[in-house]
Amino acid sequence: MTPVPAPTARTPDLLVRGLVRPHDLRVVLVEATDLARMGRMLHGLAPTSAAIFAEALSAGIVVAALQKEDTRLNLHLQVDGPIAGLLVDADTRGNVRGRVRQPQVNFPGDPLAGRRAALGGGGTLSVLRDLGGGEIYRGSVAVGPGTLTEHLRRWFEVSEQVASAFDVALLPDGREPLGRVAAVLVQKLPEGDLAALERVRERIAGGALPDALARGLPPAGAAAAVAGEGFEVLEEQPIAYRCACSRERARNAITALGRDGIAAVLAQPEGLRQVEIDCEFCRQHYVFDEADLRALASRLGAGGGASA
Image 1: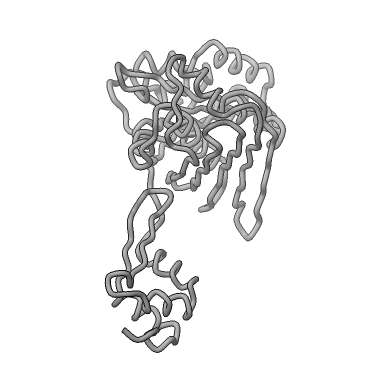
Image 2 (image 1 turned 90 degrees about the vertical axis):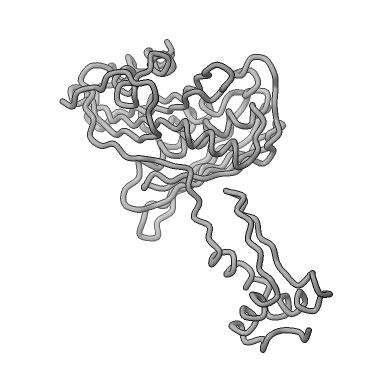
């Protein structure tokens, strides 16, 4: 069995996969502190929006880790609360990105109550999974009042139909509300011990994950604290908030304007003959000036577009 590392002052973002072999339980834990803070910074999120986004990013990485091969996953939440909704895009290589529809939501006071208030009283949680080979799976559940973590537990129960124990912990550190962010999922394998999984659920209900983070345990140690005796690390993988956008992809998006659309931009007064594109996931700003547009128009067979 892989030894559990000793407590550490600071650990990098990491995905840990493992097993509780004596009881046939699968364990996935993600330390997502840095990427949660990165998401907050990129989108300029207020505290409550940032906390919910941190839940979503860490959960997206965990669910994506259940997939095989090099595939992607989308987690989409639509609610009637002030935050309105969010989208997370994650892949099996440990990359995640996302966006929040209303970034400036904040409820001072109890953070847990604030997260519930921001989501409102109803909505839909959907997970779109690319299973490879052109096969797409979509599972959705209606959600009521609660936190995103509570909604995800319902999604695992209803959509996945695999006995699971799930938790997300957001542990403050002084004035930093995202002192440590982690998510854990424990699932019963086909021959697994349901009683052992129930004991995991009891530990989660008793605060095992935030307690492990508060004690400074690294990801593998936190996973062991939740999963129980017999936990064995199989793999550790770095993760990051990383966007797949590029200037070339933005250029390809402009082709959707077609010949006439690009010609219309080139027909504008001098100084307005450009197209600007902002990535909704990472806020990267792309500018395509007149020369860029003329080159693209030529590629499309527009002969350079409208005259200057």
